[in-house]
Length: 307
Image 1 (cartoon, rainbow, N blue to C red):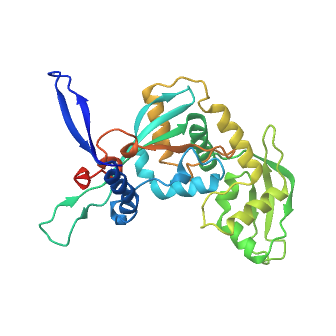
Image 2 (tube, rainbow, N blue to C red):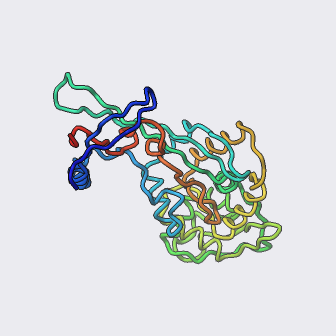
């Protein structure tokens, strides 16, 4: 297109302004922009960005979401998260601002030090988060009631499992299994350990298979660490669900803050005992559209290149 003057009507004095517009040059310069942006050094990318797998758009894999959240959120972060509000009477929106390690723009001591700050919104399922806290609390503190047997039953265990049971006798008692130890009995012969009482619950029936499961779980745990059989975990999950805040329940600022702070005390805060996700990443405030383009990680246009 041949450059030609365009007429623009001025709103101030009603006069005309002559403006030359070279469409071919604009087209050529603009077409070079994608390549220039692609060749920008990686250090200009947003630092500390939360992986996409941790976001609400990931509906395919809970495992990937859990792994992504665990990489970018530490337990201490929950103590500093700010509650923004409650959404749809079922979710808590929180803001996490976190300063990353300062980075220097050069090796010179006099150079400016740049501190990058992560600024993200997360959405928390109020029922799932509170349920997981109550579940883990029950897991670690509940002592299941036991009922003594009419006659003690000898436990036919290997020598290794006998030693494991003796070392974790208190864990077994917390699970409702009372074990009598005959210090003079032969190891691994089925006469040293006897089951004197087993756990009881209103709706859950425990048996020897549950004791075997507990001992099996103890093999891979440090001495004294609490483990529970699958029946006990299901029982605790049901109790935790009933005592947790429900979807549809309006929460005060204090209640919402309490749910978030409790997440920082959990071993695994990412899913409720039934597998329901507790939280997902909503958005990076730095790229949400507020503030200057450079703070949003967008490439600014150098208008001088069009001259």
